[in-house]
Length: 397
Ligand SMILES: Cc1cc2nc3c(=O)[nH]c(=O)nc-3n(C[C@H](O)[C@H](O)[C@H](O)COP(=O)(O)OP(=O)(O)OC[C@H]3O[C@@H](n4cnc5c(N)ncnc54)[C@H](O)[C@@H]3O)c2cc1C
Image (cartoon, rainbow, N blue to C red):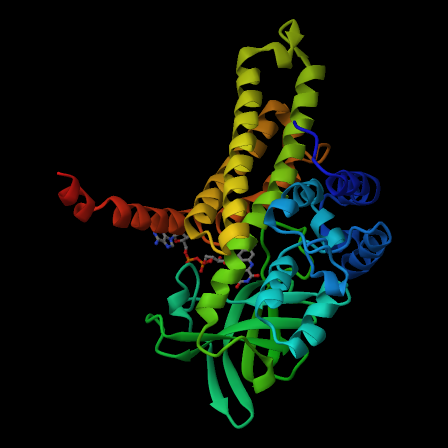
């Protein structure tokens, strides 16, 4: 494993090991058991004191304005602990929302919403997905509707799997402002304080993962009024702004989960060097070495695809194909890494004595959110077919 480059990544690694890993391991990565919001405040105070809070945030609000390439080693170190991204304020969905607001928000919206998000006094949520038959893998199915009224908009609809909604200061809500569900039409993004009348937390959806603060919530939006000044960007351009957020957000997920998978791998390699079986160390047995080597290959390939996508994002602002490829590969490769790590550790690999089982539990949903693997493959294939399809064949024949 190469040493993290740069002083910031090294400082992040030391901070995570000293302040965050012990509490993550004591509570098996269960954020509510570990103290929930109180733990977030405590760890973020420590990160602020160490000069490590919100390193990707805009400089005017106290961040370091790191670009995607610069974020990569730092976020990987943060992800080494399940609570690390929260401690540094680089966790989903806040990190992606900071990125989006930094690109799209007006001056007044920056002061009201972005500033408290960067300094850690507020959390946020991004509300896109809906129960069937609403928007899921297919955003065009969006059913939550915003209707124009005097001075603002009235929003009605239902959202689910909204990470961090319980306890969030505000929501970014995607709602349809033209067309019908099933047609692309127009969507608009709205900023809404989460305690405003018209927002009701229906329930927490119980999922396999337990490390994300505020859970994954179902929300009912009933006659929610949003004034014109809280429209994020221009009306009808919501789907385009979603792309501004999604490409980078996918890559920062890859960065963080690479850190978690690396931890599982390191634990497993240590186990293999200490455990004796059949007269030798596990680490000297060929099939155990294959598990170790395949993990190294998957981690290296993930980092290479991530680097390429981040370079393109930093240069062009968009990298749809590269981020789809990197996200799909990483979500599957990192799950393979953690699964091999569990296998190598035998019974302890699936126990609470080692951190591997909890990392496996937290990592599994990554193959579903930010675009399921099948949807990314579909879009990668469509691009390839457009590029190499019949017209190219006829001209080259
Ligand atoms: C832990 C977690 C956190 C989340 N956080 C948020 C959040 O903060 N905000 C938010 O808005 N949403 C969030 N989501 C929702 C997430 O974005 C959706 O789950 C995802 O977009 C898939 O939508 P869906 O669940 O409705 O699945 P569906 O749309 O019902 O799709 C189900 C499955 O169908 C298959 N499929 C879909 N399309 C195709 C295709 N074209 N070709 C072949 N197969 C296909 C895929 O295997 C897919 O997994 C979260 C989800 C999870 C699990």
